[in-house]
Length: 252
Ligand code: 13P
Image (cartoon, rainbow, N blue to C red):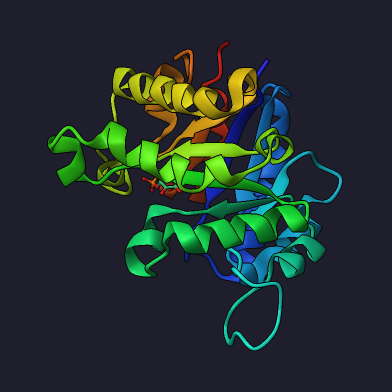
């Protein structure tokens, strides 16, 4: 049985006090959702420690949105994996399309970040996904394959067993335009095939999340698909009620 995961990527939203309120709201309503759903919230670095406090005693896990490629030292403005782990993070989102697009993250950088994450016992949520031009040119399979081969294939079997993947088509992020459940299933199944080519049977255990305008009204249909194991949620994760409602989308 693969893990079911609903993770909230708050991106660069909320002030610390708002983040704490949001986290408290998730904790308060969590009991209304199946305990089989693993909730994760990923606030900005600045509120990790306060949100960790708000999550105490609950089963809602904490994640960060990024970490540095280096362990420590003279890297002004960077935040090390060891630092976020020390604040109580269990997860770290790596390779988000916004990081690739606006901050020039390449597979070379991401290999180093993955190494830092594992060295600090953080579970990476590794993001892949094509942009609109690539989708329209029918290149989406090749794009995600390369993003996996160049990074995930470098993991050991032990490391791979901890990994979570998020498929997020760039054209669906923050656009209100969601991939259809069939489109999601098609590419999730393909991603699993690419993972199986390297890691064999372990690929069947790897959670693959869908992200991109996922909301309470479409989550159930998408999560019902065989190879979709949950969601990485942006905008709809900023309201506890919507975030929790997405978790209720699990009916399998
Ligand atoms: P939206 O849910 O706002 O489209 O964002 C998705 C996303 O990028 C999550 O990482």
